[in-house]
Length: 287
Image 1 (cartoon, rainbow, N blue to C red):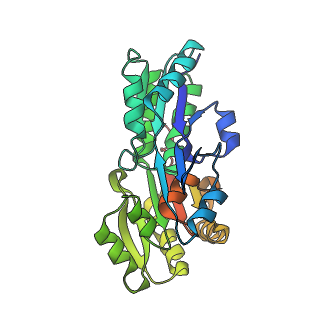
Image 2: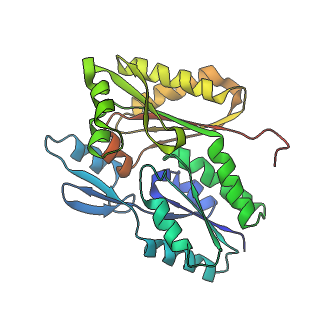
């Protein structure tokens, strides 16, 4: 049986891709105003964005327990998988990778854990690369290597209406949040080495979308690309972003995935998010 691929709920992969590649998704937990639920199972984006628009809101997230990963890995191995490659959101954002590694430690090197250094389709593209390698018959190390190489070819940029949600969740520091709120500046963020960092500042949402397009085109270089576009309660921004990217990149775009980000990202980014993920395809003939 091929190597099994596991990820977490923050990949925001379309359900049809999860089914087609037989992926296993372990959900994170979201707590909104004291109500706790599993992302994508019990709490969904609409609930999160509605709660976050309230005047008084508390929002937090928590990683899956190591035992939850251990149970998942044992089930897959007992079902005949040759091994498991488990790919997760950035260790700079969550303890999910650490929980997965703790679970893997007791399974005799049959589980490899990969830090995607991103979230959303920044995580999803390495997951898909791992799944495709497994389907081609790659061994555990080959599947792990496919994920790691995809991480290195993927870039993520996003616009938020305010840095306040990221500051509350501890994902950026207070100084960056102050910069983002000064003079109603709209921040553009990116994730070098897995941490969320202020990349640019613009004055309006429309300029934010335009800047995201410029950054995505720059990240694409001369390569053929797959694109992921996410939003939070802002479908019109996702459409504008995708239309502009299609005009700029043309027939170099191979696959496009558009989705609303889930409750975990909503809790930390807030409504209005627009995000683009650029995955540069490996040159033909590359391993």
